[in-house]
Length: 363
Ligand code: ATP
Image (tube, rainbow, N blue to C red):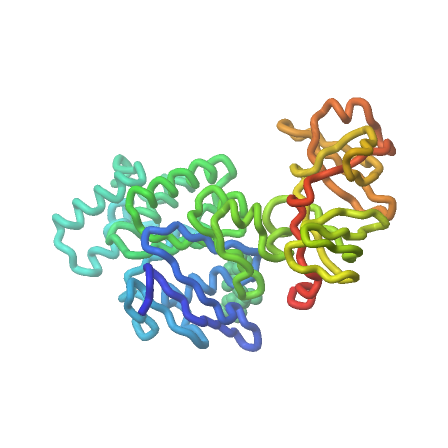
């Protein structure tokens, strides 16, 4: 039997010869804010449409609140969807738009009045009930679409890039509002975005998708700090990815050769000598120095550029073979350096995240 609010069991969705979703298994908890995150075409919307019932999966089963819904029509699933295009009826007032689904379900007039008022209150548009959608801003129209989707108190709200059409400032404000609304309602939200910052800010849990499959499911900080695959490390945040070979190993550490330099990595995956690996290191984990230090294992690089981004200065440097590396540092170091200067980089071996190269075959 299903646990939690939504269970996807071995869901595949094939269009012609292409799998949009492949053998996807996922349990979504009651009251959870879960985000499907991934690049364009990875299968996020298809997954959402399968849950809503707009698409029939090629194989697999879906449960909502313990009930198998495979044969249940979309309008009978206790699920509503908010789309990027607000899909409001232009000729109806805000109140009539929000009331529409309740009228179809023959809810009593007084109940409709109360529920519409409550829903408009929740999205802070109680004074806009008599307006037509065209007289509202994009953000207000999306709030109406959200009010319409929560008015009949569905068990699950599906949101497909709902803030995608808004400008950056409004999007950030709406992210906070949506998160607050979700907490207030205690409703299960399944949210689709390709914007990683949005996912990290809003979600209880994030599912990273790639080519129809789940790469990793985790808390926002787990996804960022402990990416499970090279794809996730590369997709989330900024990172430096190096390719190299394991040279020596002991119980705790291994040495990796990369572009003629030696990097110490944690030996947490029983690396074999000569094994090919990828290593990911975040720019903020790298210490940059203008001086060699015998006591620390440093990598020699040549400074190529610096970019001041307010809180930190980004340095772009290159290994002797031309491979670039990005690090964060304080402005002071760079005041004393210029393009072509020798710089020395170091970091804690534990901050290196290493992936066995076999993954290359899957990506
Ligand atoms: P985006 O972020 O661009 O919306 P997505 O991650 O939501 O992408 P989907 O829209 O689910 O991805 O599409 C996954 C794959 O399935 C893509 O290759 C897409 O072209 C294909 N696809 C989706 N819907 C259909 C359809 N109705 N007919 C044929 N192929 C489809």
